[in-house]
Image (cartoon, rainbow, N blue to C red; front, side, top):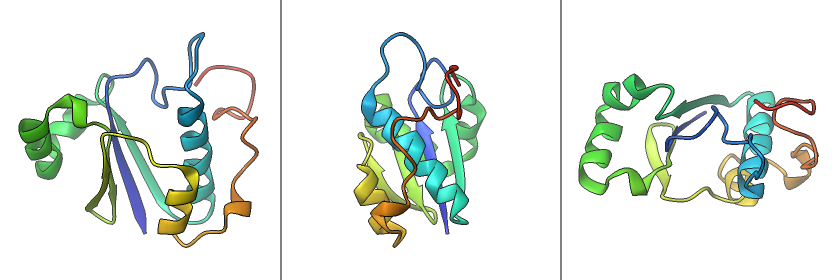
Amino acid sequence: MKIEIYDPPMCCSSGVCGTTVDKKLVEFASVLKTLSSSGVVVRRFNMSQEPQAFVANPNVKKLLAEKGQSALPFIFVDDELKWSGEIPSAAEILKTFKLDQKAQPNKKSSCCGGDGCC
């Protein structure tokens, strides 16, 4: 299985940086780490850092033309659009991949595994 995330423009690849960090982005980064360690292929693209990925994917290009940037992030599971315009909860993602909620890493740790910014 695989998950591909096409994020809106953010300061860093995960959005988990700066002085005010969105807790939902921290949880999302954590669950993506869980998916990756469980064998799921995780690919994440930030519009400000990898715009070519948005142009190269015909589905993403079409969605952007139809819905605009306000519909980001686009989250695909096995090439099927699963979520758009919001980040799903950890429980929703883990359920989609049939993983146990207990498998999720500690929410207090940063996406980088330390105290620094990604």
